[in-house]
Length: 84
Image (cartoon, rainbow, N blue to C red; front, side, top):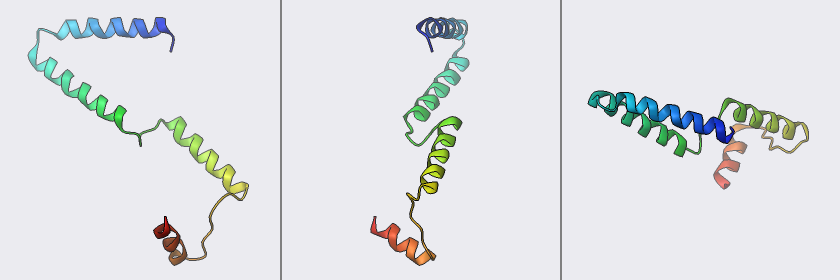
């Protein structure tokens, strides 16, 4: 995103906030939603759809190259997981 686009979004955001600033129920809703967005941003496990599929593609490539663990039964897999 360019600085111009970011500045335009910032201006639009403040204009929207100004339009509802005199309405306490709407400001409370906005505050709750903003807090929710902050929590989402702080969650390191969240990723975009593109990031997810890029990780899947990378894993498939690693499997194709033989860079993977193979287990012959669930007990073998559990033993390996417990060793971590």
